[in-house]
Length: 299
Image (cartoon, rainbow, N blue to C red; front, side, top):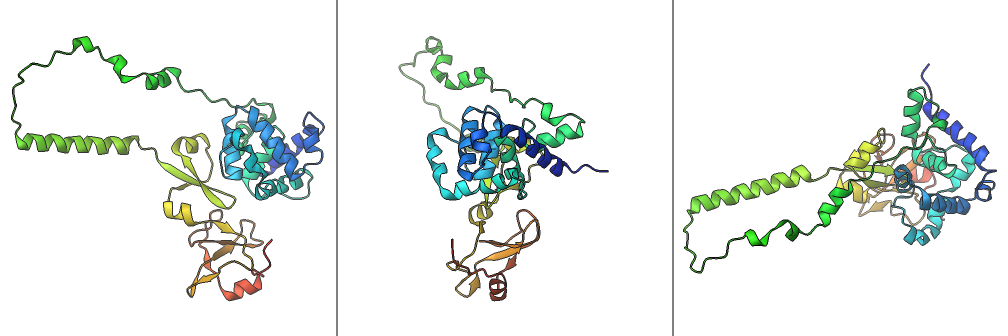
């Protein structure tokens, strides 16, 4: 029988929570309010050397962790994102995204995080909670030092011949000049396309976040799409209310589809595929607006 990795991951996190809530962070975990979980997240990220934790923070909140800008986390909308995790710890609800589960694992210091690492360890018949955290090799310092070394240090000016007083004028064949110029352009373009790193985007809660090719390689199993600048900029999930512009100039301005669990509908600002289910979104209609009470007062 195939293992249900997701359920095992949830059980392991909850089990770790039961231990940690009476540990060194009991002040934050015994009564896991959103603000306390936010504070604990900052404490852990400040000392964490696990690259996966920084990536998880960005997946969950939509921006990179920066201790100098920690005041930005006072935004009530960001604090509210920790509410479902508190309910999950208390066994009152489930978490609907892997990003939220990985954040829960971070908050209780579950070592076999993130989910991709957990599934690999289980598949290898290892005991996930006894594994040490993965470490990532640092970049070679010699390469960094070379980048900082000024170009002039590689040049021996004493080897350069003095400029003759009366240099001879050389006449270049126009065809040769044109050929060399064309080759230069081709080499420049070729180098640009060979060295340019591919970009991807990953759906996080209600918007896309850009990922580099290296970050995608470091997180096998992470759902991603090739970067589409138009979709990246304009495609957002919204919570409609009585101030939402459902129609603009007689045309639909909102699209909807069923959620991943299928028990509710979700609204988006642009057409396309649902980022979690892959189903094509539908245009909003006055019937759907009334049926699901989408013009309710804004919170």
